[in-house]
Structures are given as structure tokens and as C-alpha cells.
Image 1 (cartoon, rainbow over the protein chains, first blue to last red):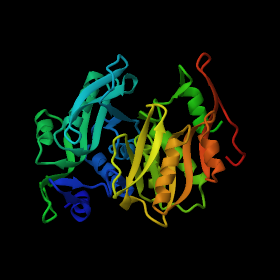
Image 2 (cartoon, each protein chain N blue to C red):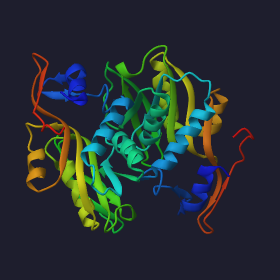
Image 3 (cartoon, one colour):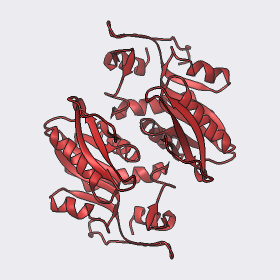
Image 4 (cartoon, chains in turn orange, cyan):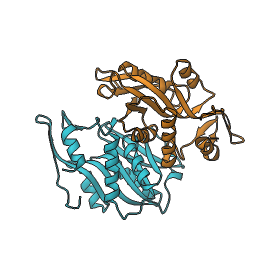
Length: 197
Length: 197
């Protein structure tokens, strides 16, 4: 197990309905040393890729993105979301269905903050069905930019997001891919990763 | 002018109705080098204060809080907000009126992430009427913790939040205090700060 898998196995909690709770260290309280390790590992895995900017989505992706922007020495942009955001000329906008909140969210970035020719590394804390990641990809590509890669802390391997993004040809790196979870036994298993990881 | 005042004077935009727009570097696109300087300056100004944890509120406070947590080597917690959040036994909850969205927001932190005896440094990007800061103070004090201080990047000096918090005896440090703004001339003036700053 790598450092993040070990942390999830030791401190993650499997809630009713097989919901993985990691708000002790990832998305409510933030273990900054762990997030720094996550950022360093993304930088290692995307070594050689051009990265002009880091893009994430509010709120829990911001900590990872900030430390990664610090390591790369590049700006960070966080996309905003709102069910009621208006479509205006000054924003790039995409839609992402939230299974958690059971509604369509609009995801947007003001136009000056994504530009043609930029190589943008997308990061987020979770990947499940891929709705948020696909929306972020759309924003980069609407602006005429290139997706350098997609860095995810925890991929829910039982859902289809990772497979869809890989099939579309994106360079996706997930530091922990959850293969199964069991509430009754509090067991979490991970998909094996290639040796270079 | 200090580094943040100089950045605001050079790159801030005064919108209609004297709204200060700094989303080029603070709260949509993030100039990580600037945020790192902000975090270092907070650490200098709160030198000698005990800090066990850094607390902020989603979303735009998270970048500052993360880098400050990195400098102190302590965890970060971000309070969540939602008009519809339910009052439950497992959360500390406070109310904050949003003048921007013209509604009462509930602000909450899950109980395990704020504890009795902890000294908590509160940080945020903006201080206007003090609603958000007061809600964060309430959460710390509900848990039996102590507010080490309140670090704010930009205080809107024409609004009452800063005065109210100082009158209540909190150690408030605002790196830039905007005294006046003018949309027509794009002029921004700052309140003078004491020599030690």
C-alpha cells in the first residue's frame, strides 16, 4: 500500500450505503502534511508534462491544488459551482450532475483565468462518476487549452468515471483506487497499481 | 504600502457600487506566491501565540489556511456553509448573514474537528461586516477552544466588522484595510498601519 492507501485503510470510515468518509484528513479537517505528500506524488507522476496552471473545483480540491501550485510555481484556479449560476458571456460554463445532492450543478470559470494555449493540470480529491472532472475538462477545452493530466486523490473504482476518462485518452493518475468497501466489517480494498507507482 | 496593498492598488478593480474585485489573484484565480507571502506575514504577526489548528470557511479562505497550516505544521479545518444544513448533535453550528447573497447561512464544523483546550487561529480572505468571522469564533468557543487570533487578508474598513471584533478584545490582524474606493477613478486608499507592520 502507498501512503494514501495506508491512511485510508487506517483512518477512513465506511458509512451506511458504502460511503467512504475521509473528512478527518481530506475534505473537512485537512491533514496538511498528507496533502503535501499527495501534491509531491502528483508532481512525480506527471513529471515531464508541461503545467502552466492547476485547475480544481471548490471546495475540497482547493487545498491539494494550492500545494501543487506552490510546488510547480504556477497559479491555481478553482471553478465555482452553483445551481443558479447564469450563463453569461464572461464565463466558461459546463454542467455536472451531483449524485450526492441529486441536482445538476453549473460549474464555471471566468474567462480571463483559462486561456488558449495553456497546459492545465486538473486535480480533485475524489473521482466517482467523473461528472466534475468532465466539466473541468470541458472548461479547459472551451478556452482552447490542453489538459496536461488529471490527478485524483481517491478514485471510487466501482464507479465508471476513471474508466471513461482513460478511454477518452486522458492521463489520469489516482493515488488510491478503492475496489471494494464493506460497512459491516469496515474493510476497504484497493485496486493494484503498476510497479512504477 | 505593504506587498498586499501594492498588489491591490496595482491589480484590484473597483466595480459598480464600490465592490472590490480581486478574483485575479485571491478568490478565483489564486496567485500562490502571494498567498504564501500572506501566510508568512500572518505567522510573523501572530508570533508567540499558541496555534494548534487553523480554521477558515469554504471556499476562498482554504488556500490561505492550507499554506498557513503548512507553515505552522498543524491541521486545517474549513467550516462548511449551507442555507439548508440541519442542526444535529454531531455539529457545531452558527449563523452568518450573507449580504452578498441576502440570506442567512448556517456555518458548521463536525464536532470531532474542534476541541476543548485547543488554540485556534481563524483566517479568511475578506472581512466586511464580520458575520463570517463571528460565526467561526462562535464555533471555536462552543467547542471550549480559545481563539488565538483572527488573520484577514483584506478588511473593508468602511464596514463595521473590524471595529466590532477589536472592541470584543480579539487580536485581529488585517494585512490591507481599505479606507475608500472609487469606481470612476479606480482609486483605492488604505488605512495606515502601525510601524511594526
